[in-house]
Length: 309
Image (cartoon, rainbow, N blue to C red; front, side, top):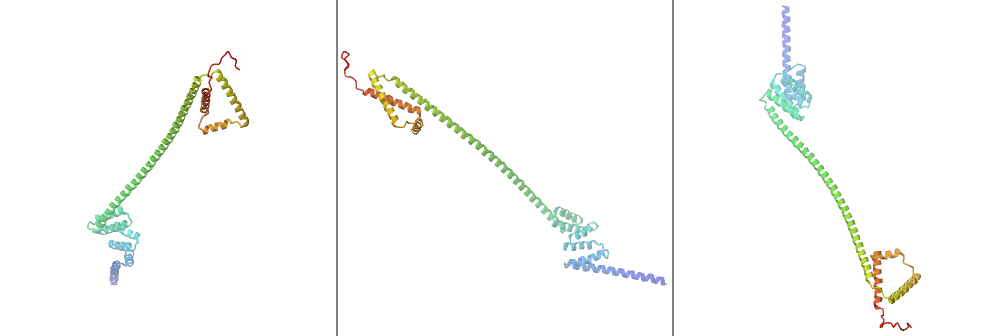
């Protein structure tokens, strides 16, 4: 009888403790939910952690709410741990929500391709998850725009590089044309100088030929002039002696002109020594001719029978 009473007391004590545990668990769940809905995420996290750690509750919904509370307090690492523990389970509805939250976190970190994969898994586990579907379509659109923008940037970069290469090629061509023009100009200048020198040389040869022809003409004229008669020759000889004597007297009184001063004067008169010599000889020949023409001629022949006196 005593033994029966002890067993009954043990059963009553155990049942009371279990009822107390259940009541405490429900109370913590209620407090955590109310705190989460009010935005008091710190309090919600505290109650959910007691349920998980102290009461060993492994409910997927509690883990999902705990992960959401971590996410709201920017504790991303603990939030990811909570969501990953859910997707390892069998509750597809909870897994769909966990994948959805993983996609949201990846999207905020600009990991759009990974976010798109998470949203796709959320739809696989629950095709009725409209929020996951909306996020999937939105992320897909962003990826398309991003790819298009990247392609435009790449095209622009390629165009800029091509323009730079074309600009460099044009600069090289301009430099080559400039060098070629400079070479052509130098060649034309040298050719012009050579032509000018050849022209001057040709003009000099023509002037020399002309002077030689004039000299030959003067000599021919001198040869064609009639020789003076004996008397005229004697008078001419006397005149030349007188001029020579006057020249010697002038040389004694005045300083003789040096060849250098004569050459300088000829240059000032733009005359070459050969041309000056030809002019001087012509003047002398003209003077002799003039004297011969104006010399008084005898009116009658000299009688050879009479003496000269």
